[in-house]
Length: 454
Image (cartoon, rainbow, N blue to C red; front, side, top):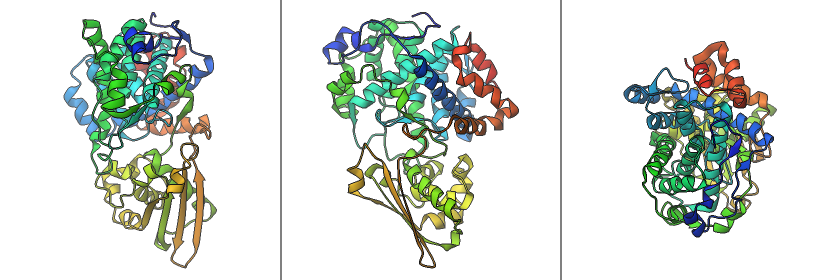
């Protein structure tokens, strides 16, 4: 495929070695991407670019960028340049640093940043159209999501940096115009370049978790370089690695059945700067506060009942900003005290705030097996607010705004982008939104980088 096309390259299962491994189900020809899929993908791209802009303002990002931006291709949203693999790394790191990037329940993770980060680095290195960039992001999103959907991740592993490396390689292969055979070889190499991630790193305050997506983006780009140089992956390595090394099971039937399914249409988008699993409780408290305001000192206790994976986010005294973003007690407390759960609500000084920590200490999170049993059809959270005067106020929510069946209005996502972009770009944010939202209109991806240069 030449740069500029509107087609997704034939999927990796057309590689004979992958076919032998059971990764079959797609037609041999390139698949046209429907207009409505491209339009939604433009929304995902714009949202992801906003998250990247916000992440670049984090002090850790500025420090790492200053060390490694030694010239090369431009970094979107930063006045710096780096070699393409490092550009992919820094972009992936920025995109997850503020916990604002999209996710996907059927895939079991966050496909967009893993595809977008390497696609941006590769697009910056060549004269590609905006249409080719969007096609590559879709190709990477779908390739990674299909693997995530078919594997069963080990409970101790975090999904970032695992199957996303496959999506990263697919995005780069798309921009380089590789056929199905070469793409399949690149993805087999990529399968062995995923990370052994820890699900508890973020809960315990380890911001290394934000590095996972950046490392996968970098390794996905390198996987295509390696395949082009003749380096080979393990034959059938995708089910081997993701079914028995990083994962503990591979469902070949589910992989085959997902052919032709557009996972990108099933994405979730969020407006709060914290883990998705905190946001059922956030919606519940939002609804209660909308009914009647509550003074923090009037709160005797808050009880949250939810499904298993959300119940793990129960730390009442987070050790660092990332731990606060993965804490239901802290997210609820900061919402009550600050009126929001945006980026600054999880800054180091906010995490250390005595009043917020005191209120978070009064929030208890409990796993209800009956709610876990209602997954995946329903993601339920029940919140009980106990006031000092003996009043009990309760709210149950199923899912949260931004879920596929409860999408945010585009105006809300545009405002989220404003909040991400305005601190660095001022009134230009509106122009940047239109550029990012409609990449198919760009004759050259270089115009995107020029527009987003501070």
